[in-house]
Length: 327
Image (cartoon, rainbow, N blue to C red; front, side, top):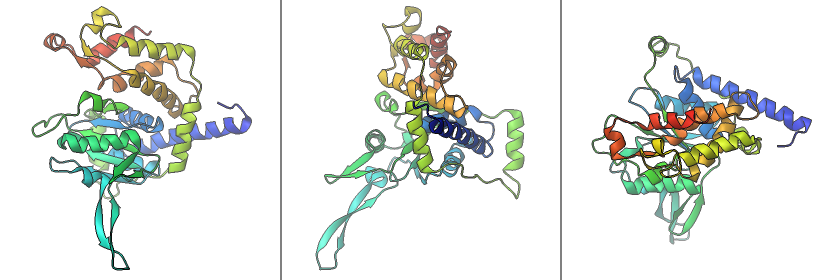
């Protein structure tokens, strides 16, 4: 990271803008401070997020607000069992040209946007899920041998409803790994719920305001990758990632794991801790950032053994045990 006065001033302005962006989202999405921050961290780190929560907890509202605040054009796709890959990525149509000949023209699907909300992604068939996940990983789609690049920055915020599992196709673990974070959205507390009832049913509901542009977000993403990170933080990330695997960590903990986190989890942490520091107005991450982000980054990447589930163990409890060893 260049320490010239101009670069330092630019970094300070960017950090200030990101703090303002977080506050702007919080003005519209009430009582979900951690979910808002983690989703912003995901976008700033250049990744995709899986939003998990029961209906009515502002998942759609969060995505719509982020699109406005960050200056990203956004689209929403409601995933259903009959949704086809072409409904997402687009398809070719035959049309008549001016000279009397026919030719194919590619009609772009909703994936050609900067912020895509994949609503209830686990209701689509594995084939449709794979089409979207391939686009998330490769940032382009291929139709009839032709490559079509997606706009950048490009992010997917997918939602899952945890209480209605009938007629769903759960994402395989290998595909879940494509999401940088799993962001849980819990029920609001009493004070927040009172505020929701009053402010969202009045005649003057507050509207989101734009704080950044897509180019500024891209610049912030580049800045995150240039931020310094101390050796102690790197050591904590390596230790945590490796200890979250069967046979590599402490037996008293890893014996509960059927499989653990791959290198992508460590990569996600390396980017996310920097992004979290910047969003909070700091210019270097700490071990506290590693601990704070361990749950959303590891939760969807670990699986428990049958014996662990029979004992009442949870993934959250295992991650907590792992992070306690970092202090």
